[in-house]
Image (tube, one colour):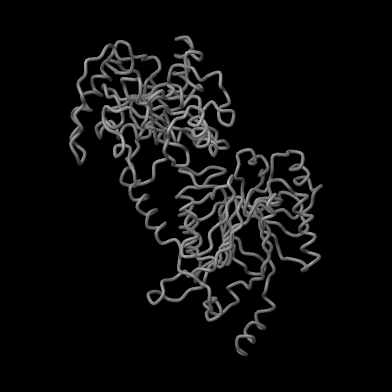
Length: 551
């Protein structure tokens, strides 16, 4: 005990006092009033770290901070924006001052303070592709590589992430206490980051919850070398009405000044590592994604002119010749007696002037009466009624078009909703409707609201359930894929509203165009449709996985 106290006294000169805040949300005055109270009570801090959204919707208040009228009392380090509307406030390089004593750390990186503290940070929320407000698996892998490449790496002192790690409550009796209108915003990629970086403290925000779990081990007992523990703290929003904790003050000695015996002196209440199952599932998903990924032949912007009839015949020939290339036999397509089909590429009824791209087994077009100018349709070339009746080649082409559209819209700070209504239709149509990234978090709730309005029994599918597991060929259904990976399914189609998806997406929180629920009210002339198609053929060309483009 005497030796331990002596060691602690030797570390005293290196001890730093740090203040951490959750989401500020532009409520600056409330934060700085509270900070002044804390400073008067306990003395000064080396710095304050903000792990959530700093700016708010009030442009005037934001300007007061940026022009120095409102001043931070102590050096304050903030992460990047979580909302697209906040991007305008970050017109500076990472590491530069935005206002008086206000430093923008950046989207991701490692920051070493003057005292030697190593602070890793990752801003934004998880998405398939990285942009100003989102990170991807590639972003996280890059940060892990940057951190672990440092000489004698054993971990970081502090990790700041906007988003919570998935599964952090595992192996603990402490469960996050959520209010009815809140839900945890978690990411498996953040769990992966925390596992690799082994922070001594991990702070997250972006939810209305305050949560401090007991520290957890970063090693397997009796199997791996003993390592320091991690303390996770989730902070609430600044000025929340429930008065949940949004400020966290603590003392820390940089690990560079500590000997190993001090670092691995674990508290008695230390739990097992919480992310084992999450990381296992994440690895499976990443491997599946890698297996499904096909090499994209990125075309040039050159336009190609060719005969439509020849393209149709070639596409059908390719589909027939490729139908048995995959691991399982292609599902035989049901032969039914139908009238003229508006979507079969060989049909005289197909609206060829709307076509954007043709693949081996599916094609991409604009839809008639779209919710927006770039409301796309992915459609099989041959006559197939639904996704569950499609063969592997058709499904592969559809997935390729989905991937291309995700990249196309991501470049415009937008995400995409895909949906299929296999009800009162005779040909498979996968709709693709873009949504601004800043509104993507409302998509699920808008579908839930539309379902409640019409008494629709809608289910959310778990990750291990495939559409073909629950939908049978010949049976009607509705299916949607949302921006954050949620998948919605409706089996009971009695009195199902034909415009259900359009109603959900025209909600005031999304596209805000209720007058466009009925596609017939949005119909354009052939000349207008042709002009739009020409425009989007050119814009989509760099993202098209096919070599040949229509012009």
